[in-house]
Image 1 (cartoon, one colour):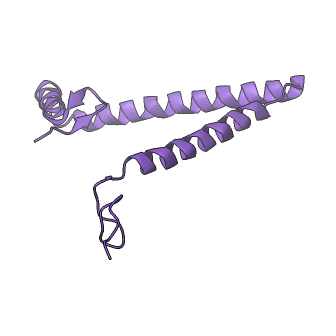
Image 2: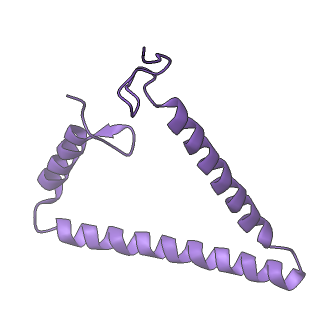
Image 3: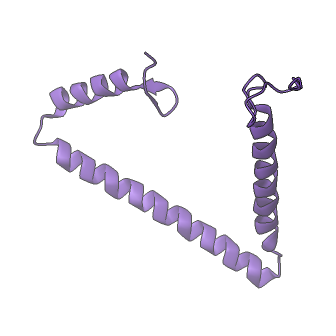
Length: 111
């Protein structure tokens, strides 16, 4: 059975072991305080990132820089993704599977 991988390189048993060690080191009464502090820190980082993005966008608009290029790139990426999904869907079909009429592809029914 394949292990469930979280974050791409840490498996579930490894995360459970890390949590067990944290529980042993800090104790059950300190974990909520630590988690609260980590949550606040993550929120501050997210807020700072959003603030920087908005400042850059505002500055670019004031300078007359065209910010629609990001939207154009995202649109072209979506179109490319859709076309790749269409091609991969066509390729991914089993060529030996029966068609709607029940015959294998390429075989014509004899009369």
